[in-house]
View 1 (cartoon, one colour):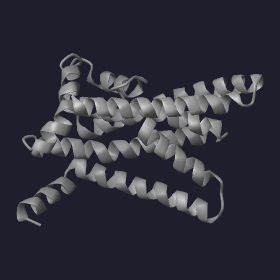
View 2: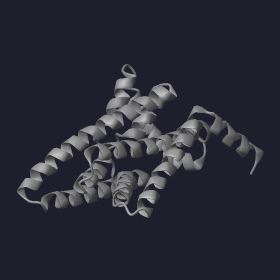
View 3: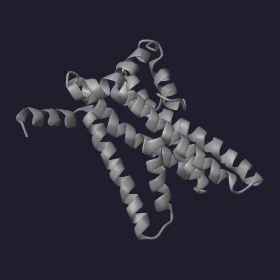
View 4: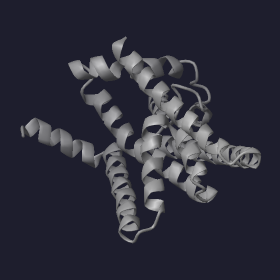
Length: 225
């Protein structure tokens, strides 16, 4: 490895973003360790926790919480898992994006793959400079496309929020969003279950598949632009 690359890695790991990145990876390892332990002792929740995680990574928190609600997991556990997974994603991807923005802005890969994302966020940043924290919180909380924990965190960075203020705001936003989704799905599934026990399962399938397909389609569309 070149000395320049070594110094770059050391600089990254010693920065606030590097610390966040290390914490995110530790959280990921802990999540995987819990799944392995539950699997080894034969506890059925290992599969629910695993599928919730992958569903959230592909389709977002709404799909993940719908999947968790359908499996009759405790609402508190669903809330904690959804918030935890979003935090892992935030702590791992945010440092990578920000470090790349600072150090690899002129590289071809950044220009092709990452610059369009920053340009999109930058357009929003110019509109919302007066209410920085509230704006980031709402971008993480609102269940719309091109909002969420990563877009919100990058918006906070471009608005000039301090790293830990930005992270705290994003975490509070995703926790609030998860709480709202858990409450919504819990009430909806109980009501539908009283009509027919099969309806929640069918609805979950439609929600999860629909959100995953929409997510994949949108990402491919952004790449080909």
